[in-house]
Length: 76
Image: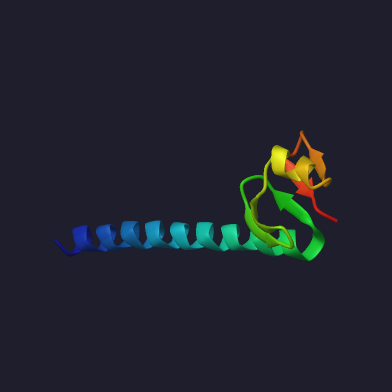
């Protein structure tokens, strides 16, 4: 019985750890975007124009550079 609880605990722990790492990765994308101006598609950023979701249309609308291959917008 103790083995079942131990295995269940380890499974739950690994799920929570994976979710935590995923959350840190999402936050890291926004930091990279704000630091060097290379923003991944789908990020929501606050600019001088207000809140903008990064995609090809918004990138080109504000005369930034869009890379179709990597799906990144260069905002500098």
